[in-house]
Image (cartoon, rainbow, N blue to C red):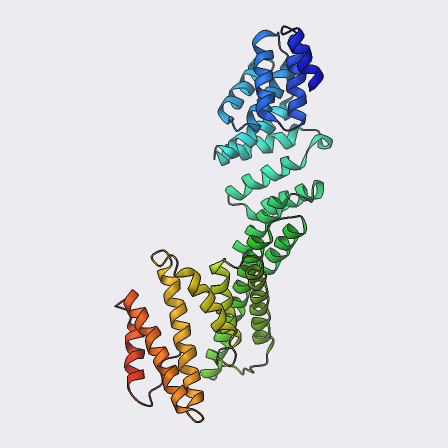
Length: 368
């Protein structure tokens, strides 16, 4: 770069130096400077088709998609025998970036027909996968993404797209595997572990729904059911996986309220009879952060209050036989939390009903 710039200072009219500088900046990924030098070169020289193709690619990387498409069309008009593969590749990329997904897929289909297989690169399969996904062809998109990864396994955005398709298809364990590969390739551990937690939670919900269905069949005497079945064990396993992922998020980012909330839900699922304090601790930490923006997090604040109310009431029941004063204090704590819910939502029928029950001696509030 220093040598070329000295050449220009000595003799500004050395046109080919601008082209060489543009190519060098392009190879370094400095596309704005590459474009600047190509602008000078193209304005003064008798340029080739290859030069215009390179310029179109530089414009594409500078996100000047319409300008890039215009140059490519000009190339095609000048020489219909030009490298169709390069033209179709960039036009397909541009169509994706400008949200013309159907046209983009047509370009990429033609590209793969004419391009020498030895000159196909990872980004070709990546853009093709994105276009297939946008055209509601998830299975084909996954195959294209996998081909891209076979050529470059370090691209974390490809793993993320595969995870997203897997999640949409309710293949949550596969989504987790792709997110784990993202972390192995340097992706942000906080955001990706949060997504892993969500996938594990969703898989746990699948088993939870199955568990409820089997219990319903048992209730109707249509099937036998044992609490120690694989379904229930699987449900607990995935909730524990979710809990572990949210714990990582909380450790790495103590001010991430959503992870505390979701960890609280997982702890609640794993300890429905409130025998431990993990869920309470998580909900309290989430609540402290949500209260910094009460208008924004109103619904989540209510969820925290609701769990903490149940926690206090359930423990008040346990304390009745050993410490009546503590039992009364915990019961009043539960009332206070439900009263706070009504301050935020005066029409909350659950809070109204439970406060009524709590005011009547011996009545147990609805666990729900």
